[in-house]
Image 1 (cartoon, rainbow, N blue to C red):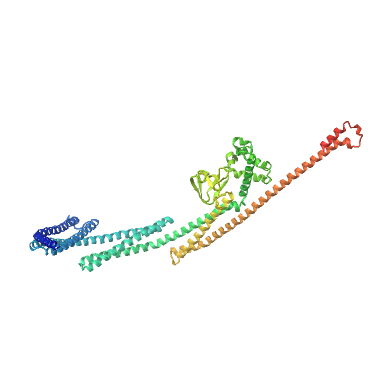
Image 2: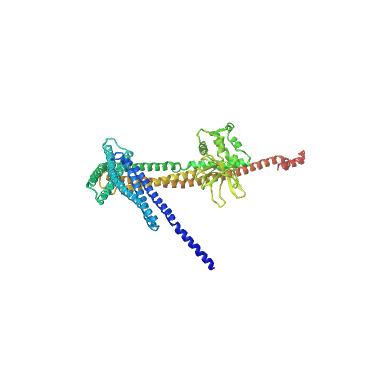
Amino acid sequence: LGALLDRARVAQRKIDEMKETTREQRERLQCENMLKEGREKLEAVDELFKRAAEAEVPYLKGIEVLPLEEAVKAISDCEAAADAIHKGISEARSLLVEQEAEMNKFLEVVSKTGSKELQALAKRGAQASEKLVVFRKDTETRKKAMQQQQAAAKVTEAEEAVKKMTEAAGEISAKESASEEISAEVAHELCEKFGEAERFAQEKIELARKFLSDRQRDARREKKGQDELQDAAKLVTRINTLQMESAKAKATASEHEQKFVAKMLLHEAAEAMKSLEVDIEKVSEESAPLTVEGGKRFIVASMTRMTVEALRDYAAKNTLSLDDLFAKVGSGAADGKVSEAEFVTFLEKVPELLSRADLAFSAEQRAAMFQQIDADGDGMLSKDDFVELFHYRYVCVNSVSVTDSFDINTSKTLEKLEPDDVVQTLGEMKTHEASGLMRVEVRALKDGMRGWVTMQGNQGKVFLSLYTAYGAFVKSLDKVVTTARTASSKVNDHISSKIKELGACEKGPLADARAELQKLRPKVGALQSKLETLKKRIEEGKREHSKREELERKKMEEKKERKAASLILKTISEKVESAEAGLKKLEEVAGPLVGGGDLASVADPIAVREAAAAAA
């Protein structure tokens, strides 16, 4: 172990001797690398000065005052270049200080040479700093000139904006002074134009004022010359003048603008009143079938539906197609059309044909049924129109899909029915065995789409409800009434809100407008009362219609009972007459046997007896 330690000490001495022998070479190499890094830093600064020179090129062409946009860009580029140079110089200076401290540790022969080089590099850095100071000073001088340009430009922009505002005020004054009437639309356009011009002018004035204030504050803080402050003061004076001109233009337009606003308010109120009157008149017109006509058309539609259902059952019972059924209407059916007379005559025969006394309608009712069915009013009923009567119509009450086939599991959705969509059935309803759902093929009236629809969900949710003329009428009428009531509330609220907004106006056009709006309140109240009266009449009409439907139903029942009684009496009468005739014949046949005469005179008593038995 001692031998190994001795060997290690010998090796260490050799290493130390070798390091000492190569120290100068190593430190010279390290020194050179450090100087190279310092030179690179300063060369980078030189490159940045080249960029700075490019940035100030616009100012070196002999043009003392550049266009503002070009000046703004040049100053921005110069400031950015100056910041980059400052950063580069700071990094170079810090590096040289570190390197000098490091070189002081080298051998004197190495450090002496390295320090000399470092001093040369430091001198270059100092020269760069001096050059940067000059560049910044030039840039600052140019920046002040540019800011003066900006200030003047902002004041000029404000002057142009105030000029446009004054022109807009002049337009209002000229229109108001003109003899012709100005429409509300033109008045609104002029007021909007002036308002926009005023907002824009005020914005420009405030921007210019703030910019000048900032420049003045900077000048005082930096204790600049009086020339700069005087120039700024002149621009502030121009801004103050613009503010007064703006106020004058606003005052000039104010009264005329108030007149326009008053006209617009009254025009809006008048238009709202007209719209409300139209809505209420629509309620009156839409409700006429119920409140004026007494719902007769709906009773006729009910009669037609009853007749069609009875004919449907009759055709099914007798295995008749709809074409066969149409052929029974009249001779014109062979040509595809029957006349009103033929159809009315057919309806007269229906009670007897179907053994349905409840379908025995008056001539007036039968004629009304035809007129309702005859949609085009040509006095003829085509086979297609006749067949159309036998297709059920349903209205969608909950959204449901229309599919391309009957089977729910394999079908694809074609479209979606929304509430109030009406469909027409194309066949009989079928039950889907797997789900138990009732499905029917339909055609959507809104777009003609054909497909299968579920009538009711497996949890009881109804998707399609039977469409009736009266049901559709009531639903449409309720919407019209709701629209009118909503419009009534909006008009009332609008007028009330405008009167409240104008409450502070004691005189002038707006005060007059408030007075006119107050005059509209009784008119709105009258229209609201008219609407409520119509609504009561509608509700009363609904109740009366229900009563009439019930009365018609009872009349039909009574007719049916009378017809049944008539048939029974007829049958009894026929049987009595038959019995009387048989009795008379019996008397004639049995006369020889019961007349008290001589039986010997009867040629064939047995034959007479058999004939009498047969007659009995």
